[in-house]
Image (tube, rainbow, N blue to C red; front, side, top):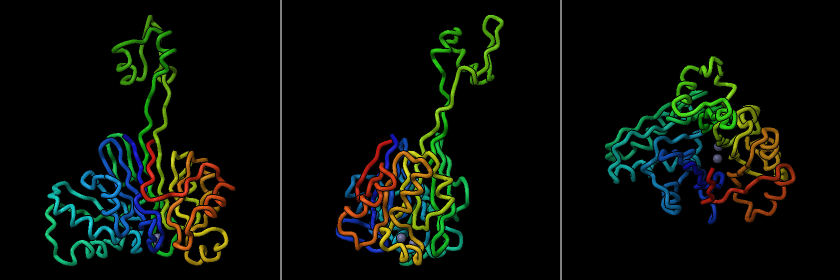
Length: 296
Ligand SMILES: [Zn+2]
Ligand SMILES: [Zn+2]
């Protein structure tokens, strides 16, 4: 199972309809949080998602709207007798600030919590996937994240059948990169192809940037902040955020399959203006809503 749920889609301050930023990603039994705004644990409950499966939390930057939810979540996990280690990633230099959110009241937290600095490149490896980071352009050090499934080797069954490849021969081919049938050498690459793994990219608070474009190339999903519409482009520039059309342009250039916009300013009471601006640039855009779920 590969599933994505938006837990909070507001930027800076919550509204009645939108909680603060957090994305829950679930892949074959492992779960991850990208950002953990205030109220994230309530959103998990509301949308029927288990906090116990969370193996790591990736905090894009230290701004309160993206991290304050950590304080409550780690305590609830302790009350529920978590034993498994929890990894929390934060840009280098802010480890102490996160530690203080966890320890300020000397709460009894009996499971191990590891607070780690974000490194550019691969940070977390699973059996069939890896999570990496890339640098964004915001008012404080900020990172985006890529969840990438491994590419898979697939056999061209038509070709294999024609050449008489069957049973154990497939294993042999994979191990040795070739096989000999009737004195004829058959190379693995001539009877197989690489099926690219699926990719989800989370780009938190940022000006539109080349790193996002590069890392989002052909992604299945790009989740990108878009605090404002173009009417407020000067505000977006001064506060180092993106407008809807700037985010949509990144999605278009990166040729992603779907763009999900999040982190909206509280001034947008309905989606009309947002969707109109987004679709003018990139048709396959969704205006993120709390609880919005995608199965990949
Ligand atoms: Zn923010
Ligand atoms: Zn921010």
